[in-house]
Image (cartoon, rainbow, N blue to C red; front, side):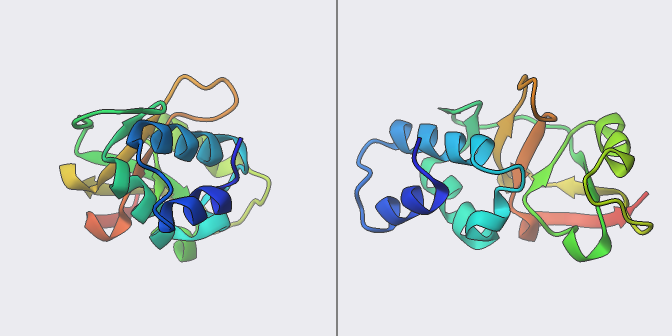
Length: 145
Protein backbone atom coordinates (compact mmCIF):
# COMPACT_ATOMS: atom_id res chain seq x y z
CA UNK A 1 0.00 0.00 0.00
CA UNK A 2 1.21 3.49 -0.83
CA UNK A 3 0.85 6.17 1.82
CA UNK A 4 -1.26 9.24 1.14
CA UNK A 5 1.90 11.34 0.81
CA UNK A 6 3.37 8.88 -1.70
CA UNK A 7 0.15 8.86 -3.73
CA UNK A 8 0.01 12.65 -3.80
CA UNK A 9 3.69 12.96 -4.65
CA UNK A 10 3.39 10.51 -7.54
CA UNK A 11 0.22 12.25 -8.75
CA UNK A 12 1.73 15.75 -8.58
CA UNK A 13 4.71 14.55 -10.64
CA UNK A 14 2.42 13.11 -13.32
CA UNK A 15 3.30 9.50 -12.56
CA UNK A 16 -0.27 8.18 -12.79
CA UNK A 17 -1.42 7.57 -16.35
CA UNK A 18 -3.98 5.01 -15.21
CA UNK A 19 -6.80 6.77 -13.33
CA UNK A 20 -8.27 3.45 -12.17
CA UNK A 21 -4.99 2.68 -10.43
CA UNK A 22 -4.92 6.16 -8.91
CA UNK A 23 -8.48 5.62 -7.61
CA UNK A 24 -7.41 2.32 -6.04
CA UNK A 25 -4.40 3.93 -4.33
CA UNK A 26 -6.47 6.89 -3.10
CA UNK A 27 -9.02 4.49 -1.63
CA UNK A 28 -6.41 2.35 0.10
CA UNK A 29 -4.63 5.29 1.68
CA UNK A 30 -7.92 7.00 2.63
CA UNK A 31 -9.38 3.92 4.32
CA UNK A 32 -6.35 2.06 5.65
CA UNK A 33 -3.62 4.51 6.63
CA UNK A 34 -5.40 6.52 9.31
CA UNK A 35 -8.79 6.77 10.96
CA UNK A 36 -8.56 10.52 10.21
CA UNK A 37 -7.13 10.55 6.68
CA UNK A 38 -7.76 14.22 6.08
CA UNK A 39 -5.00 15.02 8.57
CA UNK A 40 -2.46 13.22 6.37
CA UNK A 41 -2.61 15.62 3.41
CA UNK A 42 -5.14 18.32 4.25
CA UNK A 43 -8.48 18.84 2.60
CA UNK A 44 -7.24 20.73 -0.46
CA UNK A 45 -4.80 18.02 -1.56
CA UNK A 46 -7.29 15.21 -0.96
CA UNK A 47 -9.90 17.13 -2.96
CA UNK A 48 -7.37 17.57 -5.77
CA UNK A 49 -6.71 13.81 -5.82
CA UNK A 50 -10.39 12.85 -5.76
CA UNK A 51 -11.20 15.39 -8.50
CA UNK A 52 -8.42 13.93 -10.68
CA UNK A 53 -10.13 10.53 -10.86
CA UNK A 54 -13.74 11.61 -10.84
CA UNK A 55 -16.21 9.99 -8.44
CA UNK A 56 -15.07 6.83 -6.62
CA UNK A 57 -17.31 4.18 -5.03
CA UNK A 58 -15.47 1.62 -2.89
CA UNK A 59 -12.29 2.06 -4.89
CA UNK A 60 -13.84 1.99 -8.36
CA UNK A 61 -14.22 5.03 -10.60
CA UNK A 62 -17.79 5.77 -11.65
CA UNK A 63 -19.56 8.41 -13.72
CA UNK A 64 -21.55 9.79 -10.79
CA UNK A 65 -22.70 9.07 -7.25
CA UNK A 66 -26.34 9.51 -6.37
CA UNK A 67 -26.85 10.56 -2.76
CA UNK A 68 -29.65 12.06 -0.72
CA UNK A 69 -29.46 15.84 -0.68
CA UNK A 70 -29.04 15.93 3.12
CA UNK A 71 -25.86 14.51 4.61
CA UNK A 72 -24.62 14.40 8.20
CA UNK A 73 -21.40 14.80 10.14
CA UNK A 74 -20.45 14.45 13.79
CA UNK A 75 -18.10 17.26 14.74
CA UNK A 76 -17.20 20.08 17.04
CA UNK A 77 -17.74 23.49 15.42
CA UNK A 78 -14.05 23.86 14.49
CA UNK A 79 -14.04 20.67 12.37
CA UNK A 80 -17.42 20.76 10.67
CA UNK A 81 -15.98 21.85 7.31
CA UNK A 82 -14.14 18.60 6.65
CA UNK A 83 -14.46 16.09 3.81
CA UNK A 84 -16.02 13.08 5.56
CA UNK A 85 -19.79 12.91 6.01
CA UNK A 86 -22.43 10.18 6.10
CA UNK A 87 -25.90 9.78 4.59
CA UNK A 88 -27.12 8.22 7.86
CA UNK A 89 -28.37 10.44 10.65
CA UNK A 90 -28.33 7.38 12.91
CA UNK A 91 -24.61 6.79 12.24
CA UNK A 92 -23.80 10.45 12.87
CA UNK A 93 -25.79 10.44 16.11
CA UNK A 94 -24.00 7.32 17.33
CA UNK A 95 -20.60 8.92 16.66
CA UNK A 96 -21.40 11.83 18.97
CA UNK A 97 -20.59 9.58 21.93
CA UNK A 98 -18.60 6.76 20.27
CA UNK A 99 -15.36 8.67 19.84
CA UNK A 100 -11.83 8.68 21.15
CA UNK A 101 -12.08 12.41 21.88
CA UNK A 102 -15.35 13.18 23.66
CA UNK A 103 -16.31 16.81 23.79
CA UNK A 104 -19.32 18.61 25.21
CA UNK A 105 -19.75 20.66 22.02
CA UNK A 106 -19.67 17.65 19.66
CA UNK A 107 -22.98 17.31 17.84
CA UNK A 108 -24.58 16.17 14.60
CA UNK A 109 -24.46 18.61 11.72
CA UNK A 110 -26.55 18.47 8.56
CA UNK A 111 -25.79 19.99 5.19
CA UNK A 112 -27.39 20.17 1.79
CA UNK A 113 -25.08 18.57 -0.74
CA UNK A 114 -24.95 19.57 -4.38
CA UNK A 115 -24.29 16.63 -6.74
CA UNK A 116 -20.93 18.11 -7.81
CA UNK A 117 -19.79 18.17 -4.16
CA UNK A 118 -19.60 14.38 -3.94
CA UNK A 119 -16.09 12.99 -4.45
CA UNK A 120 -16.38 9.41 -3.16
CA UNK A 121 -18.52 6.93 -1.28
CA UNK A 122 -17.21 4.11 0.88
CA UNK A 123 -19.56 1.62 2.48
CA UNK A 124 -19.68 -1.96 3.69
CA UNK A 125 -16.36 -1.82 5.56
CA UNK A 126 -16.80 -3.64 8.88
CA UNK A 127 -14.13 -1.46 10.52
CA UNK A 128 -15.46 1.95 9.51
CA UNK A 129 -18.80 3.73 9.34
CA UNK A 130 -20.21 4.20 5.85
CA UNK A 131 -19.01 7.55 4.56
CA UNK A 132 -19.21 9.99 1.72
CA UNK A 133 -16.34 12.27 0.86
CA UNK A 134 -17.44 15.71 -0.25
CA UNK A 135 -15.90 19.04 -1.11
CA UNK A 136 -17.07 21.09 1.88
CA UNK A 137 -16.83 24.30 -0.15
CA UNK A 138 -19.78 23.03 -2.22
CA UNK A 139 -22.08 22.27 0.70
CA UNK A 140 -25.01 24.54 1.48
CA UNK A 141 -26.81 25.28 4.71
CA UNK A 142 -24.43 23.57 7.15
CA UNK A 143 -26.20 23.56 10.51
CA UNK A 144 -26.20 21.76 13.86
CA UNK A 145 -29.26 19.60 14.50
